[in-house]
Image (cartoon, rainbow, N blue to C red; front, top):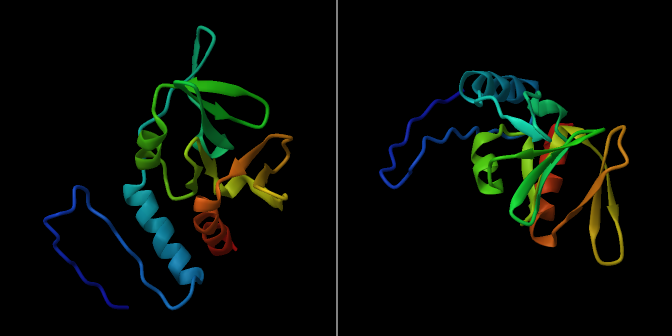
Length: 149
């Protein structure tokens, strides 16, 4: 394995890139190790009514905007969160992926992609909830799901 450090003064944040000929167990292990070291996110506060909830982000199916609010969806519930989608993109670990201007999904929770005449629908494991994928983001999502195998 070759390790290299590149300094780029134009970058705002540090970035780690793993280049490999294929996605295998060693690559996954390296990815998980880096995520465990640097992928820690601060706890997110989810709001519902007058209560604050501290949920495991792995239980979140997707985040979506509704007007000026961002909603977090679990299998059985929906919460409001005080972040914008672009902020969540920066905060969340690699399993989350933007699928439209108004949604970010947890790729580990995806059960199926259904192609309709004019759109693509994401369905989630053990849930009746679904969300639509923009054509612009479809390839990124498909690649993420392929790497998950």
